[in-house]
Image 1 (cartoon, rainbow, N blue to C red):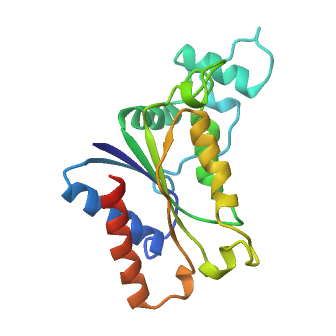
Image 2 (tube, rainbow, N blue to C red):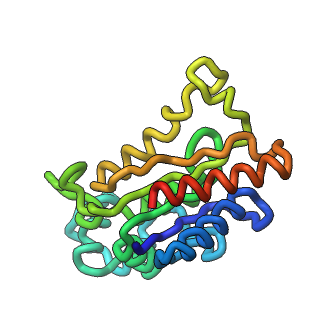
Length: 211
């Protein structure tokens, strides 16, 4: 299987980095082919704007989504977007490795979706969900939190974790991508080395079950 790992964390000593490395090692050992998009390392620009297009048709409405569709169809998207789209189109499955920051995606990863998921590339009129253009790709979220698991229960202070993962899963489903079971490592800033090792063992098992 060809698997893309999209990694969104700036710190090499972080637990996100450890999870990313675990995925690379486990999946390579299982004979999967791996590509990596380390968004901070490549200084990926998360801000959607007019520089995303090599040319803009002056007859089009000045709306980002309209121009984005036209640029994709005419091969006029910026080179950084095209490189990431090529990796996504290459893979059978994608793993998103990121910390939950303010109960959502880090900005650099949100911008990856904003800039890559162009109309006519990821979806189009009558080509969404079960007819989405990115099928049959599969996707798995691997997420870390600062707060412990107890706070992400239905009766916890933050509520059920699924309410935070749902918008991401919904975006992926909209483009026709099949959702795999997510992996969540809770409270990683305050756990012991033993607990970190236990999480890595659990993640190895989870990866083996999903792939």
